[in-house]
Image (spheres, rainbow, N blue to C red):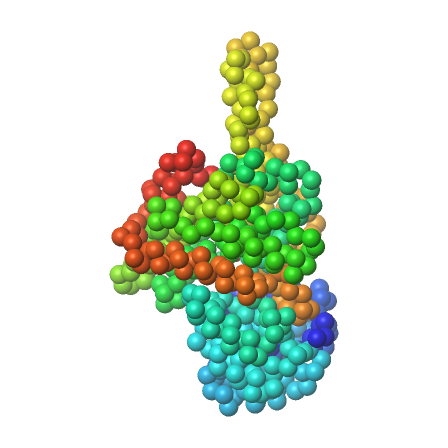
Length: 481
Ligand code: BG6
């Protein structure tokens, strides 16, 4: 397969993802000369547009979503010149001939980005195959949702596999495109400090929180059918868990890293009913703004969860006895994605007779909105200690934003689109990973369906239902709020 491509084909080109993320990301790659001058970008969707109409659509998207200091009219116009458009109803096989004609010769490599409704996956692959657009110089990026359980995901994967080999398939999890998520590997494997302690002998537990302040965001139908578990835990949070807990890969390449992630995902123990909590937000106030409850946002009754907390266990040597508490929800107190590693207490407190009480070290890896790594260590409070030794927690603080102040912060899709165009698979999810993720998630959903545990209400603007707090408190631990 050619390393780069001469064309990029965007399905769902007039959709929300395209407007907000894909077109601005492609512009950034164009502006920084990271894509070849000859690379054509062909958009396709049902909307009845021509090239000029799509360029106007892209211009409006860039006007809305590019930061002001990046709006260089000449560069934008050069970018728009790359764009072409072919209207297509992907459920109708006939239209694919015209799409192939628009693309012309694709022997120099074609990258396809498929972001469409799940129901259109199979007909789209079939259409591409019949139109001769599934040859071995083609690679295909697939945006979620890729199914809603193991069986439907396997069906989609089978359909894609009928046209493309695994080496041509790029399953997107946009969290892997985030700089700070990749930094997890740099922190773990680029330093000698952490790895010797990164196990059950030294770590008490780990917390992974992805909290959001937003609610439904106009995605009523999709979200209500999906719920928090499948929207965020099945993919992004399990990827964070895998990168945090996997064994050291031998190399920074697609096979080595994905081999380790899949081993880890397969070691996840099925979750017991008492180890999980699901919730749904009620009316409240988020950061000072009054907001409605989920069912009012939705306009109908529903028991879909907008919050989930899980105490997960990994059955391997490294992590035996170390719980990983996962928590995600909409309409929570603040937007925050972080991993907190709680180390064990010191084995013996030499300060006890002098009144000193050391607290266990904690490593806080904040992924967003701020980007930092903070190691909480104990220090002695300055003084003559006549009344005893006072130990206090202080932070060894590494702000990535400050340390790399000169480096341009790129959004996840810039990285992922460039990797797709260049055929670099490391930051994409392999089929066996997705299936291991679904297997664990399906068992949770099965237990919800057959159990009598209900979705618990929580007030918007807080940290979820009380039961989620109890999940850690009854183990003598607390969430890092
Ligand atoms: C998406 C989910 O995959 O990720 C959304 O469908 C969620 O519900 C979003 O809001 C969060 O992404 P980020 O990058 O804003 O943390």
